[in-house]
Image (cartoon, rainbow, N blue to C red; front, side, top):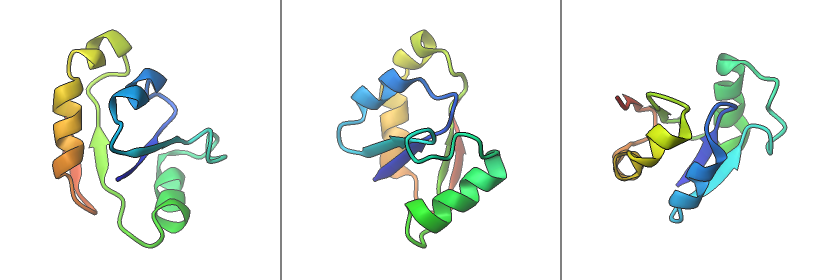
Length: 88
């Protein structure tokens, strides 16, 4: 699955998603886009016409996210196109 990190997502999380192709908004040249614009760009350019799924993380704190890696990976493995999921 292609994964796009927005500006607040800790980069070390990428190392824990080996089965996924991870890019950042910065790498894509989208760092100045706001949320709605970022989603539109992802649907148009990044996912080649597929609906973007959104996975909202409860925090951007790397120490807190690190303890929930298994939950994040499981959520990515089950989320489908157009889905919205918030992790707590």
